[in-house]
Image 1 (cartoon, rainbow, N blue to C red):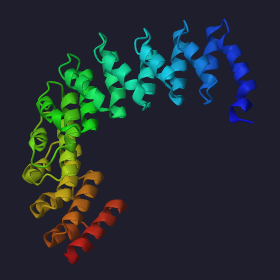
Image 2: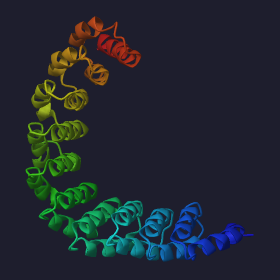
Image 3: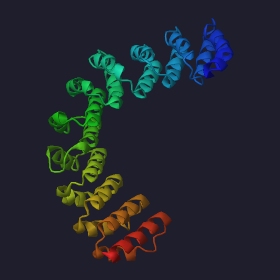
Image 4: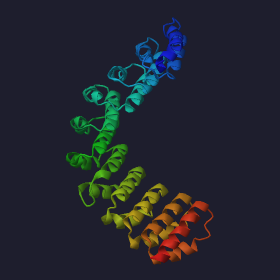
Length: 319
């Protein structure tokens, strides 16, 4: 007996609830359908997405997260325009989980919708698809008046890793909205060390917003941008410890011996995660000059940090 046949009696019971005159009962039906992944649940959920009650529609949108198929995608895309904010959000979250190439044209078409939420949600879903057909729409969206839309467009371009998008990403590093600039710093991780993208990351280390500086330091570490070592060393004195953590990690990846004093000083910082990253970075650099700092911190109270310090000491001694 096929698996779905075992659910038929249960679906019949739920279907009765989904057609009840009581909206509360219909909502219960949608919630129960969330636990059923068989195809027979889809028509009921699509019906719920068109229900007159906002709570029923929201429950249906959430439950559709477990189902695929073009009819599901089409319904969720339409639900992005629902008058209920909860329904729109549920539809957007469900779409973000779908990776159906057939959805690309539908989503691209919505990137020019009059509603900024629809534009942003469509771009967010396109990001996960990593489809070149989304490139023109994402590039155009960089000029959108809504920061949320521009930020989601950056995400699409970052996932595509398209070299032709690099000039636009570099230009967006000066966006007036910090969340967009932060997204740019993360998106530029695919750029080559020494290129225009890397230079934009270097500029990000001096941004007025600490979250942008943090993202820049993280991406610099991932591409091991050696020219950024001096800027990273300066970032070890950043007023925000989250930035220092990413800078320490990046310095470890660049294996720059001249960073030893700055990293050694961080071993006495009050934030244990920063001490941990500093110890790990010193171990990666493996320079004997770091032994003075590491041995002085060998009585570190945090066991995780202490373990890394011992590892770093063994690395430096073997250098």
